[in-house]
Amino acid sequence: MVLMAKAIKFLVVCFLLCHVIEAASQDSLVIADDKLVIHDILISGNKITHEPVILRELVFSTGDTVFKMELLSALQMSRDNLLKLAIFNFVNLNVKHLGNNLIDVTIVVTERWYIWPIPIVEYADRNFNSLIENWDWERINYGAWLKWNNFRGWNELLTAKIQLGYVKEYALAYSKPNIGKNQNHGISAGFNANQQNEVFIETVNNVPVEYQPLDIPAQVRLNTFARYTYRRKYFALHSLKLDYYDYQVSDSVAIINPNYLGGGATSINYFMLTYQFDYDIRDSKVYPLVGFNVRIKAEQLGLGITEFDHPTLRLTGIVMFHQKIANRLYFYNTTKARFSSEKVMPHLLNRALGYNENLRAYEAYVIDGSDYVLSLYNFKIQVVKPNSYTLPFIGMEQFNKIHYAVYVNVFADAGYVNNEFPNPTNTMVNTWQFSTGIGIDLVTYYDRVFTIFYAINRYGEHGFFFQVETPFSRW
Image (cartoon, rainbow, N blue to C red; front, side, top):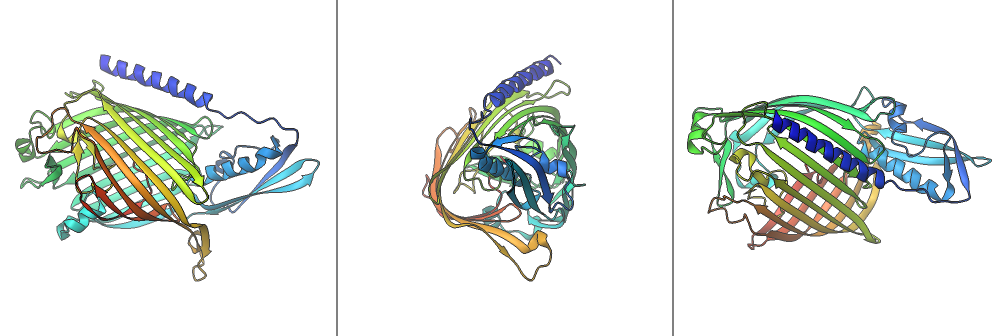
């Protein structure tokens, strides 16, 4: 309990520090003579979404006075905020002048399709390229996944999952981000039960070793969580999350690698308390071109409530910087670093690069360790500007109008993983890894980015790689 008290004190200090950062970063108004008064805000197109959800994202409100020279940026910022909610396909803001310096702001939104009952037919592997190299029909997952965005029209999220096959998984989660008069508070909760017949039991020669015991399942994991969020204005988000994890593995897993859960254990369970601060002023969460995002995360694994032999504090920082250099030319750098107070951890909890984040051209490898830094550099050339097209043969407005853009990007990645007690065969730890290449990104609707790129790593290994995801969504 003493350890838990120290962890809570540390997270409180993090909260206060980030609160000061947020307050200090607020933009001041530019003084000007010409002023406009917002007479009314007229919203249309929101068949499901309640108006308070939309009004919450505007940087102005009815009765506010704005300077003429700031009106355009205020409209653009409000539009960006609404699109970041990921519940609208299109958002248009216009101004109607009424005379006597009075204006009406009109907002027209095109809502997305919110209910997605999606069948699951997928291959159980870390990434698309591993699928191509190690195809096996027995590794197919199947089932159903429900994602209900903008549940009840209040930007709530309801998800449920039933997955059978190679990896069995059952999950349910609910999130409400806009509680209170000013919609500043949010809550979420859920659980996830996972059963798999094969595990990555260790890492040898920088490659995860798969093991399927006779006494299946190889591993059963249960995770439950509850989270509270606080969003005072528009760009800063504080969150406090409590997780409970329970892992059970077969006897043979613990025998073959006693360090899989540590000390030859066949089960571990622990609580984890996480505080995260997120300050995001990028123009988009799907494919940002300008702005920056700062995230600070503090995680305390083990709170003294259960018998957990590896309590550790993990600090993670992420900075994403996006800049327009010239017409159709953009630059971004994303850097992520993690520090762990405990350097000796069970194999399951000692993962670094190659799982959620990886260097391009290193898709076949994983690098385990307690601490790491990853930095990605990218120059983007806008080949096709953001545009939209209406499909005449589709009647539903949620689907008949698509947006698209195409970018060519030249990139370079660098990463370093610290592991004080590595397997001698894992030569990628404790040394800088890097890669470079060129690729094409197709950005389209419903937050999908299709990427094909050619990359080469420091060992001369090269090839074409594919991705279909929202960049940095897992970071």
